[in-house]
Length: 428
Image 1 (cartoon, rainbow, N blue to C red):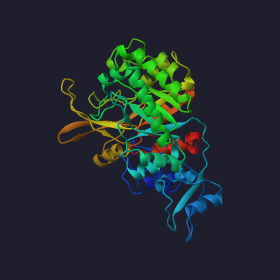
Image 2 (spheres, rainbow, N blue to C red):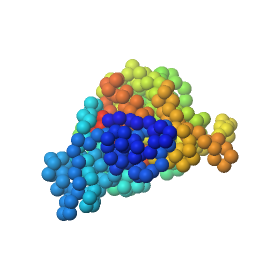
Image 3 (cartoon, rainbow, N blue to C red):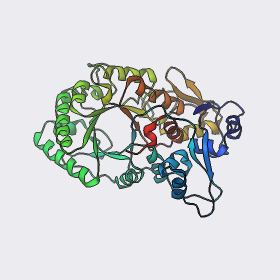
Image 4 (cartoon, rainbow, N blue to C red):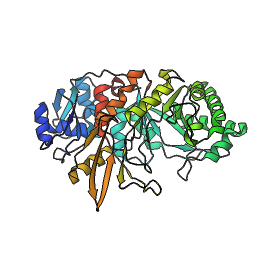
């Protein structure tokens, strides 16, 4: 695999010719069209087919897979333009396998909202070991809000991924509710009802793991939260389920702030089977423009976490989105920056003629341009930035990676995973 950075004057045709591959292969690996305009500085994933096949009349995808001793998922991963569908046409060339041999081997998964576009869901599912629908909210009486998670669960089953239930204090008002968390964490009776409801829902839906995400708890809830997690883990482990808990990106025990003080790294890690480090949102919608997950800050969180828990318990959070800030930034009255995907960011850069730059310290791409008489700054993720963050997992011996979130179209990320990580090429 090669990650190519587009130079002035380069087209997809010229880039493909440079590497001796077809434009169709490059386009498929990066989720773009053969004639899509490219931005200077844009990253493209290049892989080299070892064997290809041209579809003939009467062929089926299942038949092609069987003839070459590969699975349908293998073909979906080698040909992202299939979008997880077995629909093929005569004359279409499919990659059977590439020459690269993945050197990494750790589980990967990610979060999806129930309204995720179906074609995108089908595209990402074959690359994932875990799919996590967001979210089952809770009420003060221990009951659960309903979640329309059927399509995601069907995709997990079809493409061979595990499904984890996501439990949070995220309410119908689309916020994490501190008062709700306090009420639940201080009532043993409510917790008993809640745990019973969790078990019933997991059995009903076929979930194999639980991911708990209580945020903005405050210092007074730190100990009750860890105790609650221990109680949940004991109950679920007895039934064969695993429990993961999300942790705010702290760098020291006494880090101030409502988001951080309720998460005691050592106590939470001791209570559950694994944790997710939410190593993103340095650049956020109401903040000044900057990298979403600057690599030095991500390292600081990981290195602090390793003083409080074993590496094999840690999933690293990987951001899969960006933001578009209109300048000048006003800290007193910030205008929310809309979020956007890698596909949207690169399309904007190409359409306005912006040159994409790469911050070597933050390990993140960004660009600026003028819109409606105002300066605009965009930071997002691409194959280079995600590759840098995934590299932390073997460096520190971490358990795996979880993406927030998979609703954002970023096909080159999937191609990167398939080229580098054995687990992304296998079924659970």
